[in-house]
Length: 171
Image (cartoon, rainbow, N blue to C red):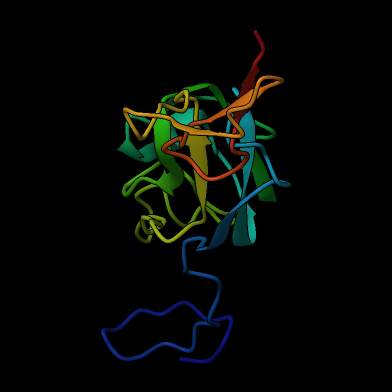
């Protein structure tokens, strides 16, 4: 059969190849550099082509420790780069945004969403470190130094990196 003529037999037909592949997630990265104690942050999901029917229910948060958050919104239902906002962040640990398997996401040709397959799950994105836990004393007995008539320095060690805190006690 020639191109443009109906294919009436079980023989091979000259049908031009078209796009039959569902969109693919190239990356899921943090947007900016959110602080560890930020209650809101965002991830940017980048597809290999424009994807449509993108919604919050297409994603899930993978967490470690006591970190938690809520997938609040997507910046658009269609696009090749979509921002997903996470709110109500709490706890201590990490958050990672993952794309679920078997979603309704598809491309402009209708590929994906169950037609010509689905967009594959994606679980290799960047993580965001969450830290809302207050530091605690690591040693039960503080050390004393400079014990003179004018001042005494009391040093304590915390369970987190950062500044060491000193208390000067005067008579």
